[in-house]
Image 1 (tube, helix red, strand yellow):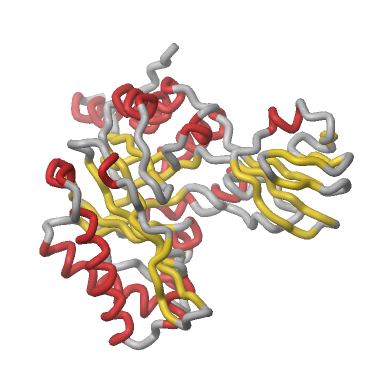
Image 2 (image 1 turned 90 degrees about the vertical axis):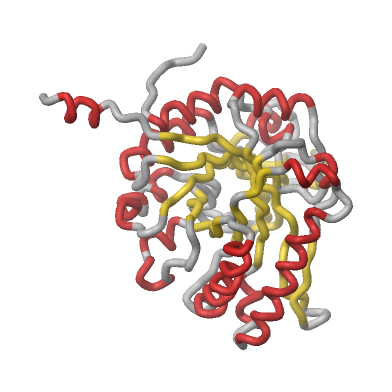
Length: 345
């Protein structure tokens, strides 16, 4: 084997860790600071606001706008992120209506700096939009992105968009968004309201049906992995609601819940957990992503990943969400994706 072949075989991918912050009030803690220091990152994808169609007003409106911006750490590398529901673009099929939305979104992004002296220390190199577009909304959404790219170019930023697995596999039908980078959301692989589903957050058997298409995707890609968990409540096999942060260990140690089948529990009497009411006879499916499943995801994805440098973003930076994961676990994921097989204690 020649030296050049040997160098290629041990090539290590550059993986830059980051976190999503997906709350409407930004609150910073010493634990969060410690975690970012441990992973040697200052990168945060911070949701600025949502954009949704409000039936009552028959118009598009911003909702869940971020407050507490003064708490964002100085010298942080921020990617402002905006979530837009798909139904917005069902209603905005006219280019003039989309142009109006572009102007309003640009104003909302500029407001990030208002009344905040810390903003001058933030490093912003990218703006991201999160929208699960469809074939029906592709034209309007892509026109929106095309117009927004003029704005990001004027700021000397990249423009990025989130990508779902089905949009990777069926790129001919869904199209390639006109952005500089994509970010693959490697989660929500199933239908949460399907009674037969095993784990709608992440099921590798389902996800692996899409990943072989990654090398042919024409955009540079970053990656988001899930850390969140929830309980899915069914009543007479019909979906009722989700309960965030409710994990397997909690129900396993609760006398009012009987384990039926690993992650499925039956409610034995009317009860409350986390200020949520459960009725006798309800069935609760716990969906969570173990460190082992995350490692399996990384080992699988790195075989197909098309680019040699990427951001690996964890969703999301929240004390309850992060509880089951040690700093070393997250560090190991980053290192393994890079191709470094060092084991951390």
